[in-house]
Image 1: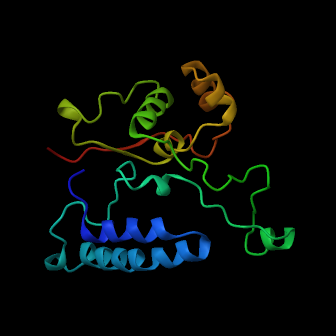
Image 2: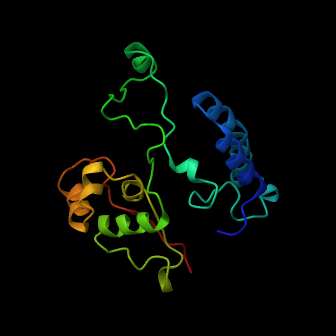
Length: 184
């Protein structure tokens, strides 16, 4: 991705300074306001569209964005605190620790996992006649999420394939990829 927009740079700087959930929430405020402006422009007033095609986007794998790929866990003070605002709270065993991966650590890792998840069927995307194709949905999410510690320890393609296709740990993410091919 080319040079980040000023809004993206400010977002990265604000979130890097966040030390807890409250400060991270405050850092998100201006970004959400900017997103609302972008949505309004794209939905109606086309004269207000941003000049950059990358407006509203942050390259998570760029230098200085490492904190955005890590978990900032909410501090749980009691069982009541954990359950207070959630219909289906995450159990302690399912919660990620602060600083642990919230997504794949690099674009290369994501591509490797996505290729295994999709059984290589979408491996040519991004090149040749497939350069204008976008893949979205649960298939992308499944490949973006960090692998379990057990799978990471095994470190093989077979273990990753089994994790996705046999163990059923990601049954809600494993939908068919949504492929969007704009007309040429």
